[in-house]
Image (cartoon, rainbow, N blue to C red):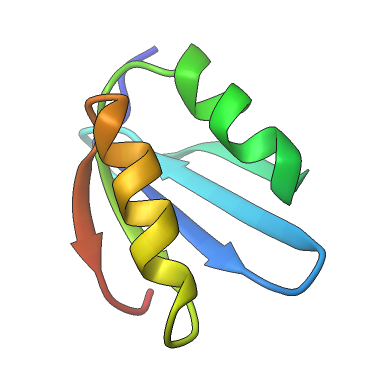
Length: 77
């Protein structure tokens, strides 16, 4: 399955993933614990990712996901 964009909402204990296809249809909705985020992204094809996070958290996750071929966009969704 191809994703146009995957948005990630962070919180203290869970991340919420929201993915859309080229027609902007929702094709992914998933809640993950922090330790499962990298494992889950490693299984997905590369896609644009937007990340909503507090001050320091976005740096870690942007770097971690960028290593897997995910292009990074920082912002709110």
